[in-house]
Amino acid sequence: MLATAPASGPWTPSFGPWTILAAPAEPFGVEIHGLHGEQPAPADYLHDVLLAPAHREAMLAWIDRVGLVVCLDVRTAHPSYQDVRGRSSRGRLSQGEYYHHDGCSGPTKPRVVEIRCPHQAIERRVATAVAPFPDTVYAMLRALPASIAGLPEIAGHRARLSDDGGLPRETWDTVQGVVTRAVRRELDAESARAYFRDVDAVVRAYRAPWRMGESRLIANANPGVTMQHRRAYLEPHEGGRPSGHLVKRWPAEVLE
Image 1 (cartoon, helix red, strand yellow):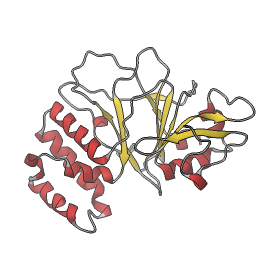
Image 2 (cartoon, rainbow, N blue to C red; image 1 turned 60 degrees about the vertical axis):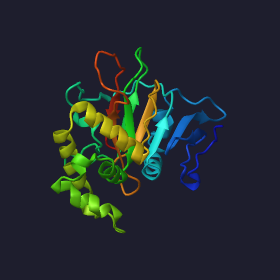
Image 3 (cartoon, one colour; image 1 turned 135 degrees about the horizontal axis):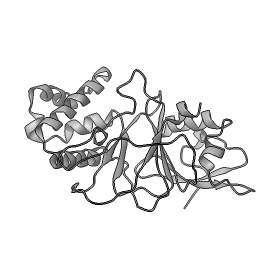
């Protein structure tokens, strides 16, 4: 049953004359199914209400706290979206198939990443996994096959999993990079994809099928909850099957 406010209670922002129709996402986050008010909500409720200048900072702060806000059936043709770059092949994983923050190769990371499935003729068959960071790092270490877990550059980090303090904060990115490079080097493409499906299960990633008109707003780099995401093949990638496309943007920076 939908509620007019999600479980985050006092952190739920106010949106003028409308209240949100929301439900908890599984296993975390919030799904917005639309807006309720005395007058009909606009079809592009994401831009005309949630990210309108009067509400934008409150909305971004809410994403900071919740980690993932999914907006369903948004009808928009906003010009700020760009096609998602990178393609996968049967023989090699693309960079987008590894857990990552957007902007990790630059000096700053965007506050929020929005990934969107536009209304289109072909359904999106490839999932997008979203999970909390650094939980992704711990899951990557725990899900490693024995042949990689025992490598000298990894064994020491695995040994610290049982420590009360765990991995020091300053090592999270480094450890993730070490594990990713080892997986790329030691496993063939489909074995690596199977490994990351195991990681998804360990970390309890959000990877619901894409729905037309859906936007996922992901906390990417902020003082609150920080997430990572990846392109996730939930079955062997054999190629030749059409799949709908996604678009992306960094709303905090693009709409500023």
